[in-house]
Length: 243
Image (cartoon, rainbow, N blue to C red):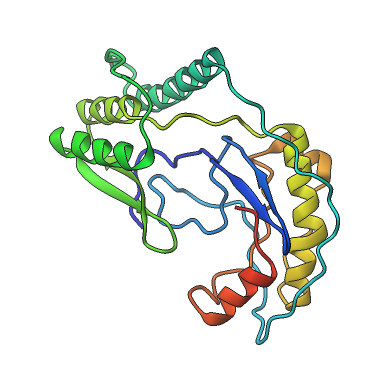
């Protein structure tokens, strides 16, 4: 796995798919762990390892969880506040290593769609002479670029690229949205996995899950043993994970 200074901690859409209806749960807090691999800067996981793999797939009845809470719509001031907060977080990563680093001017010029941002990030990093790290998801699709840095100047250049080319931030999940996700995970996904012989560690309380997110230390998973197999496809159809 290649690493880079950051794991893009932006959950653009936590989507919970029902058998007969789709429930969208939008968030910008973090990138959900399920289905992510080789992300730049990834350093561990709070997901819980599954303890067994099914030999055949069975379905589990979907409970009635009610309507998915609607995400908050950000106004211009809130969007800018999130951008600046993320920029401050990234700069803190630089000064954590190089206390005498001088912060460069803000070169942000507007939000880009994913394809534009990826192309611009790649060019910025390579033009700066930095080592390019490529982040891919489980299917091998490029989802981010980062840079490996070893000097103060390289870290500052990487910071400039990361903050110049941005996707528009999304609203962090509300307590209602996180509670809804918890209900989905504990009332459907975990029992569905269990019906297929896959055990996960016990969930924290609903209050803890919401209060500690995204550091709650628990997120159910089907494990990696089936990845890429026909059984994996069938299991994801029978027990669609929160994404």
